[in-house]
Length: 567
Image (cartoon, rainbow, N blue to C red; front, side, top):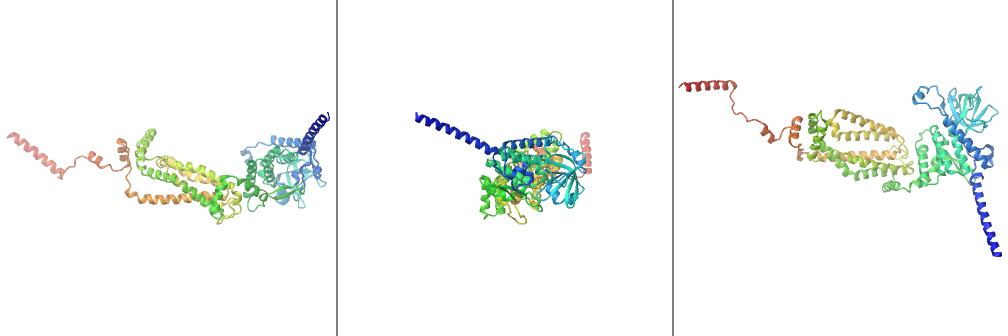
């Protein structure tokens, strides 16, 4: 009996412990002060004064989440749908979007301008309200009858707002005379992500951070950088973390104008229960490189860098030489095909002239001519098709190796991880030369004037299109592509030098059999073969007398015949 009682009590105790653990876990996930906000900018601090002691109840958080979600939804649903034509026509009179920090920092520049600015609306004794920036503030005065849209019955103070109005100055501080107040979608999403993070719902927090960064990206602020970095920090899978950190690196580390200060973000210091402001570069460089180093393509690029003594630039150039050497057999086939097609061009032009009104017949005899000479018109396409997946894989490897390229220099390039305009121009010129050489290998373009004109346009248009596409690409990748083009030019020059040296002993191209070959030679103006000349030429006249002598002899010969008949 005693043992049974002890067993029952033990089971009850175990159940109670399980229930207690569940309650504690739920409390930690939602209601417990698991997150602190000291050190964050005003835009990221939610629930006002309660944040000082970290007191967040489940009810407070759920109400705040619902409120912020409603504000974000209203802002999205009521965003004006303006076409690009209307936007262009009204651009002069439209309000200009400006970040709160820029407005506070350089208020005199915006004086008298109609602007839109976002921030957290707070009460003020100096004016109707105030927006507080990291360093300074912007006072708000409301014009008579200013509408408050999208807030319903909620208190306006402490809410993320988007104000439209004219900038004035009060001393050196900016004052915006507001004509419209509505919810700020980007700030609503950002604060929504913070609320989800405090509540322990990391999946929803990541989703909200991504949406917030998308809405803030055009403003190019530290808040946008924080949203993307935080999305990576809260992700659980390496692939997702790497994706967010790579995007943050591209947008907020490498593609930053030289005159602009480095982007900053905020990271939690849990031991001191505060947030610390640090550069995006310092925060994500090591974890990003650690994640990328697990990839095969990272190691692939690193192998060539290691061979070159750890010099990233020479490693990239060695990689370019290696790739071009590996695909040289295909490149040689391409050059051989181009040379063979060039020899057949006179005959192809003849066929084209003959069948100017019958393209199907031309194509048929064109292929017969190629088959007779063992030439494949599509032989030049295979190397181009093979190079594309190689180029994509190399690009992936360089992107993964980007942290190692950071601050690495080469000639005038000071940072191989970032874009470089001079290198981009050099690459564009090499692409124009590459396209010109490629088009010369196209027999169809040589025969069709209209297609030839289109190919000439593409020779310039494609490199120019790439120029604008690759403006933000790492200089290391542009160096690789420029290197491959230079190696290709060297390979072609060496091949053509050898071919031209062997031209004297080369056999002439075979003609298409039968009537087709004869007509092709006739139309192209080529001399016929010796057998055809003997068959076509009439017997040569060996009589060298003049025409009068021949007529006179013929006349006298006729008289002699008549005299013989009389006799």
